[in-house]
Length: 118
Figure (tube, one colour):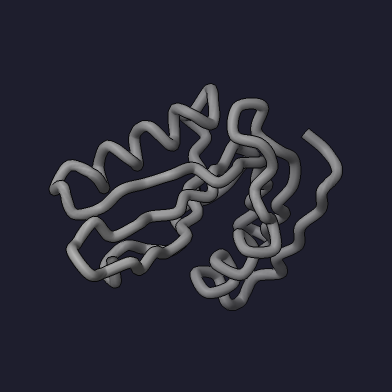
């Protein structure tokens, strides 16, 4: 799981995102990691989750669960990311957790979040 990027989003735009908890399926290993994935190509939050989960689970060593979603506004010109909203299917992600993951990936950005908006 150490090789899985904790945040992967499109370089610019407004798009849906999901917060996914990835669990190890190895005997005696109950570790997990939360990852953020957001892409403009996705019509639904489930589209992102299904694609990411399929890729991560194909080796048989990992199990994924979606723990919420929302939207991301990524402005690469002004180095700002805003996390907000919710997923109709998965509920609202913990935007504070998502924001912390994004801060590691984008340390020079101003990253904010709000519970308002869709």
